[in-house]
Length: 373
Image (cartoon, rainbow, N blue to C red; front, top):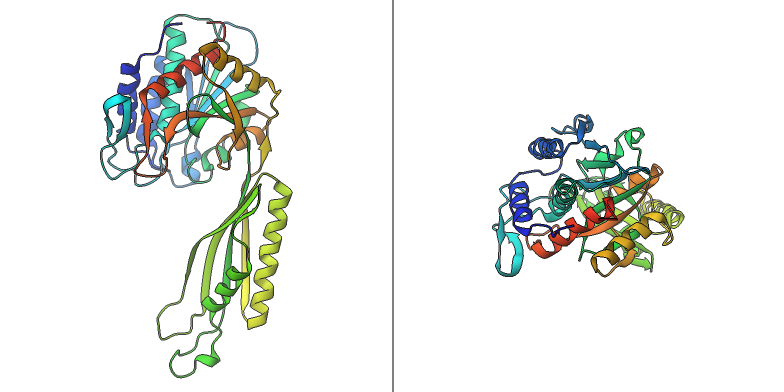
């Protein structure tokens, strides 16, 4: 198989990052990707996931018949970007480094994955190399706790193995394990009073919340579990004892049962503390994604390792503390792993990628779908 074209990769990367595609506003990106997939011979369908969340586009599913026997292979990346993501422009620097031209993210998360999937398939198609059936899923709302694939109809998927191109780092790295993520909200209801004339008649909701937070251990609970409180708000004016205060946080753990126990501890701590002050408390919890682990001897890992070896790429297998659509793949019986796609410093205006890594990623995709090439 011939080498991937960095010029063509750059043009496609620039074209797609120019498209504004923040979460739930993926319409233009979806329309362009439909055209690209159909030009590669895919049958493409779009679901109604966007309407569920007030968005303007759905998940894109594509199917391409191959000439080799065996179950299809599923390739996936997401169409949405985080903010600030309006008015993005990619700039090619010396040495093949690609950065944002302005005060926005670049959009390499996850245009890098999309471009590598498209170019890898294009390479195989142009050389008429036999391959297995290929399925592609480009999702919406991934950055919003995987909302797009949370409502996708997985009965459409025929593949039993998947590669999700959505992780930072050099090409050749893969995550076989990812954590449970549970979010929580603690709401304290106190009692209002005039802060100047009769503060002692009030129950200070912010004070109670502060005590709750002080009693909780934040950061690393142990080597496989972390907890964070990332937002707090309350009160109305400086002359009023605040009647309410709300904080929001999350728990992540590679051990799902440990995450559940930690949330019970958080709730009990909040209730005990509120009782001491005579306040009321409400704790809401939501499971965003459930921990999984793919074993190192799984065929999906072996195929990846073999592709890396064939291309002379160092193969690194580890785990991630982030989430991806692969959580929903594994939940629905698809053995998937998450691959690095050459993006760096994502979710910041310092985000960048490298053309060399994008080329390697495309060649890796091509080798995954046509290993004999």
